[in-house]
Length: 341
Image (cartoon, rainbow, N blue to C red; front, side, top):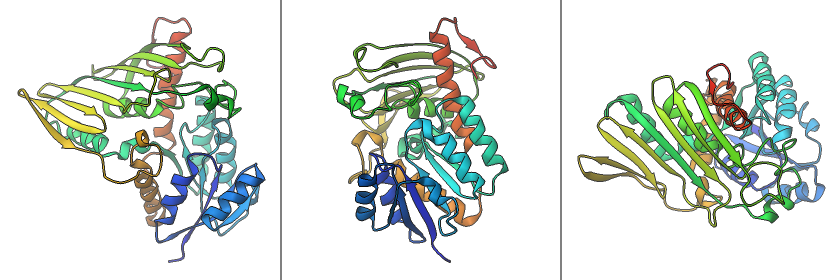
């Protein structure tokens, strides 16, 4: 079989994880990287042994490139994805899939009409604790899920925003801690809990007021149609990047994710169910190890002609939840199903 040709648009912090994952797939080849900064494009091309471009439109007519990875700022995802899908490419986009829900709907419509597939990078679904949690929910071995919580306490410096002009702005990032850092945890909560019936939340800017126009902290109470209640807290105002904490309480036990390990608390006994894989993740330690697994899985689906499961419909769910939190914080008393989307 001829190798699948790939390209990466955007040569920032997340691009190396994508490049390394592509390099580890024996039936794929990274043929081009694209960045509007010619120096960055040239350096990345040299690093990965491929062609460097400054205009993504050069990819549209390239018959040798079948899959395009979007590692660009949030506000560029929708327009690029729609063009690439119309050109017959498969598109794998970093989170969030778009700046907002309407833009994501345009991507979904384009994907529905395209020959190529649209995949969304929610790599935390591939982390061992997440897989184990979802398996135990589906099996019912601990009885019904009663409630759950997710806590993300990270830090972002002034320079993090000042060195990237698109960050911290509604028009280009689409929000703050919710849409950028904690979207993965919100995605897991909705993936574990199922269909949402209502959400009530609030956002604040606690320490970065002079730097950003979006929020650095948020909390929410999420009600699911199956009567499960979810609580969420996330912030970029902490002093360090702590591992994400998850707790899921079932009728017959509790699952706890602490320091990337998953524990089962049952009958007064705490049992270790999974622990982090050894070795480097290829990125920041608190990102987890799911990027490579997701990219390998996406390519396998494309190779085999199967539909990838984290598609536009799945990617929109986290954006809808975030939108509900923003709208609730803006003055409403809580949004019911149909309103928060």
